[in-house]
Image (cartoon, rainbow, N blue to C red; front, side, top):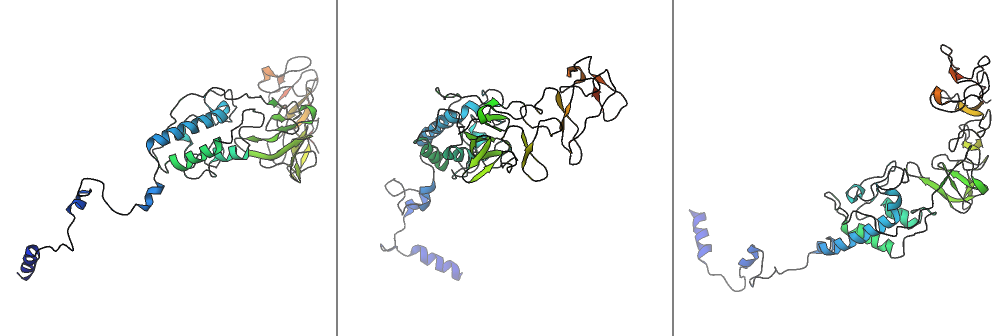
Length: 342
């Protein structure tokens, strides 16, 4: 009863003008129907801009990325130009996802330097140097602002406003594959199976990464550091050797000769220099495949693949059933096992 009496006294007491109750505040608006009064929300600065502005910024980012990346990384790119990364036209796959074989996020919201696409454009390694169309000075800040402003931290992510590459996407100068024994013309460098001319960047692979520096007479030069030449350190990442006829050795991480008879097979552009050599052995312990004589009677068959695709100078390549370690050989003499390098 005492509590009820107190409540009745409070309800019956007149309200003074010094403490009026603003009933409209409970309805979320001011007394005159306008927005509620009060200090500005400090979090408003971190909210995204109006949708119309982000639509424009997203369209601009799409043009930048497709113009500079679409020739290699879109579904319509020829062959394996993008190294398996061929979904540049799908924004939902780019946000907070990594590229094939890479651990760096392609587009990271609020973090342009942590976005692989942005960082590669800023450092000038993408597009590759052999492509004449380059990002403009206005492209970088536009792409940066798009990543900072218009990409949400969590799904759902937006999609590009268009579905086709803009015109004039630049001219792609195709890379020349390395020749037999990792050879390249005019002192070029063989990196990841393709030749780089003197003065060009050493090369990059979607799966492995970029070898920093410039090609110079078969070696990769990066400041005071030189790698990739015969007896030089192997280039990182990927243990690359760029000079003709070299491969990274297992013993000391230096580039050793390859491709000659009795030497280890080269990795790219033809495993052996001589047409009458073929890769043999390897597959166990510390021994890698090596170049062995082929094609003559008693020697192993030249070529790769099935027996029907392999060749001999005389006769037809034959498989010696029940003779372990010899496999295919050329008829006309007793099979001679290839001699591994010492």
